[in-house]
Amino acid sequence: MVSSECEPFAKTGGLADVVDALSRALGELGHEVDVYLPRYRGVEPPGPAERRLISLPAPGPGGTGEIVELLTARADGYRLRLVDHPHSYDRAGFYGEGGSDYPDNGARFALLGRAALEAIRSEGGGVAVLHGHDWQAGPALLLRDHRFATDPRLAGTATMLTCHNLAYHGWVPRERAAALDLPAAVGKADGVDLLREAVAGADMVNTVSPTYAEESRTPEYGAGLDDVLSDRGDRYLGILNGIDPRLWDPATDEALPRRYSAADPAGKAACRADLAARLGIDTSAADDGWGDRGAPIFGMVGRLDPQKGFDLLNGAAEAMLAGGARMVVLGTGDERLVRGLREIAGRWPGRVAILERFDRDEARRIYAGSDLLLMPSRFEPCGQSQMIAMRYGTIPLVRRTGGLADTVVDADAHPADGDGFVFAPAEPGALAGAAERAIAAYRDAGRWGAIIRRAMARDFSWTASAPRYVEAYERALAIRASRRASQPGT
Image: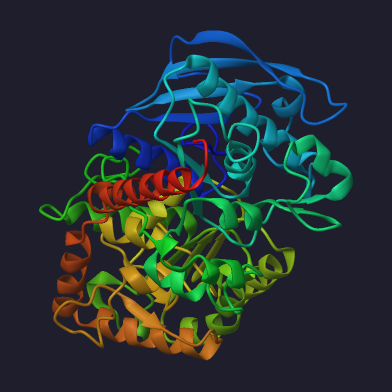
C-alpha cells in the first residue's frame, strides 16, 4: 500500500480508516501487507523500529539524488513503513496550511512513491501488487511503469489504484513536473494530472462503492474523469468500503457515558439523555406530545461543505424543526454554511446545538446519543458514518447517491427490511419530506424498535469487502502477466 494517510498515524478523513482496516483485513486473510506512509511531523512508529537509509536516484536530467530514512515497525496486522524526509514532511500540515496547498505537493508525494519502489527494489524480495490510494500514490504507480519497468524485482508487480475522492486530481504545473521523474509524454503541455494518468495506467482501478463506480462514469459525478473511467471498462469497479466492528462497538466504546449492545440496548437511552443534557437540547417540550421518549434528535457529523449536503440542511432545517426535530451538528468548514446554522440555532433555542470543532470522542457520543443521523450528501463515494450510525442503533437519513444508496434501505419503501430513510433529489424540500417520514416512524415505538434492530444487525465489516480486493489483485496480476507476455524480451 502507498498512501498519504493511515489511521491512527495520520488522518484527515475516511481514507486513513480504509487503509488501516483493509490492511489488517488482508493480513487476517494470510497476506503480507506493507503500508508506505510519509513520516509527517509528530508521527512516530508504533513500537521499536528498524531504520535504514535509502539513496534515491536523481528525478530526471540535472536533478539531484536524495537520501531518505525508512522506519519499519509492526503495526496491528501489517508492517508500517514510514518515509522520513524532513524537508518534505516536517511541516505544520499534511497537504497545506492556511487553506492553501503546498506548491510542491506533487514532488512530496512523488518522493513517497520513489522511496517505496526503491525500498522494494533494494530488498530483493519483490511484491505481487502495488496498491495506491488517491492521487498522492499516482507517482508510485506511474514510476513503476517508467523507471522500474524492467527491474526483475518489480517487472511482474501488478498495480491497482483506489479512488476515494475523484474531486482531488493532484495537478502539477509543467514547470514542476520534472521533479516527478515521469515520462515526458505524460500529461499535457501545461502540466500533469496525476490522478488521470494513474487511472489510465494502472492494471486495475476501483472506487469505494458499486453505485459510485457507475455514477462516476457520467459528467455529473466524474469530476472531469468520466471519459477515462469509462475507457477502463470492466477494469474499473466499485468495492464497498467496510468498517472495523472492533473499533466501532457501542458495547466497548470508552467515549460513551454508558455502553450498550443490540442484546442489551438500555444504555442508548442514557447516551441520548447525556447528549441532550450536555448540549442543552430540550427533547420534552409539552406541546409536541412526544411522551416518555421525547422528541427525536437528528445528528450530523462531518465537514461543513456543500458536498456533504449542509446547504440542503440549511434550507430544510426550519421545516424539520417545526415538525418536532432536534438537531446536533458537529464540524467545521464553509463559513457561509456555519453562519446559516448559527442563525437557525438562534431562532430555535433549546432545539439546535452547533459544535464548531473536530472532536473524535464527541462524534462517537453523537453517533450513540442521536436517534437519526443526517447524510444528505450531494455525492458520496461510499461514506462510513451511516455504517457506524447503524452499528450504534442510530437510523440514517441519506440521499440516494453513491455508497449511501448501496448501504441504506428505505423503511417506507421496504417495510420488512428497511433500516433507514432515503430521498433522491438534492433539494431541501426532499430532505424535509424524508425527515417528516422518519419522524412519523419514530412516533410508532414498536415500528421504530424494529428498524433499530434491523440496522444494528447489518454487517459492514471488512470480511465481505477484503476478498473482493483479493479478487481484483488476482485479476491485476493476470493483466500484468499478459502485458509482459506481449512485450518482446520480457
